[in-house]
Image (cartoon, rainbow, N blue to C red; front, side, top):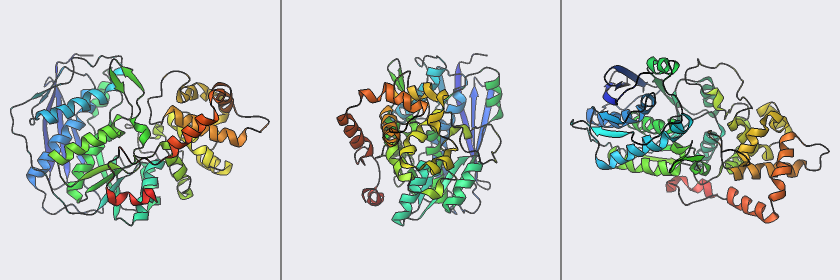
Length: 451
């Protein structure tokens, strides 16, 4: 593995005919990368007069987010921005973006983040033209999990005009979920430089990047091109909790889904991109287990949702199978635990095809999810308390059975004896409450949540 001294943000470009944005990066001006984002969406017409200064402003900031995927190949001390210049407030945002969002990457690769990520400005004029819009249109970021489907059903109750969007490739599961929702879907395609994967194979570093943070910039750029002002995410309160620490830095797999990022990004949007765009999570005031309780009311989605990231492999070809979950990863185990108390046996079989609590091979994983052993898995999972409460609710349904499954035996022997009636009451109140503080939800979206 060759050592590099400096990572460069070299240039960005936009083709006004094809609506393709290109971003270029380099290590020491020896190895260059170019990534392309295709904003052309079949069935949608962009605004008629795309302002050159506005699109340059958006792409300059967007390019800094995309660059993290290439920078992590070999984190260097210096990052030189040849394509523009950051002011002190912007520089603070990007220092946090790279330092805290690569925390898991540094942790798993056993790297020290200190003395890295020093952003150096090039003396080049930076575009600074914000865009305005009076559009009432809303866009809901669509995954293939249950959370975005809950957001969609809540917004349908408000009679607010909206469409959905996806980013990356046109994944099979996105098509299936999108067809079920029956709402027009924007698809922004991402074409990463093949050299990224070649260098991974050669032994350069790889690991988690804050994809939701990159998507935030994608959707803000798309908001200008397709004229919408409300960007609705489906990130829960549980995402605020970290996994562990690396020195004094909290490592949070879901950092880019947290309230802190949401607030920081809103500040960045209002000051540097558009005063009219609102970026928020409709589910911010809910813990994941409350969202699961909501989702259990929508059986029309039981056949189509996934909530398994093993179905999301960035370099695999499009999946064309109905196999929607692996049933052995942390996310599958967590989703099963939060949904199981609210599902019948038949619906559980319909969704998962099995009872995960019967699988003794998941005992160590559940110890981590329960907080008995190790750290919370680096996955999009909720808190230890949610797992405890979800397992408790299901245990109360089966405790009189002559035999209980291995995972429930684990819960019965190692967790239940430590729980008092008061503990359960406290958990229930905490986890099933709808919180109104620490959210950025606009007033017009709040009515259905309090109903």
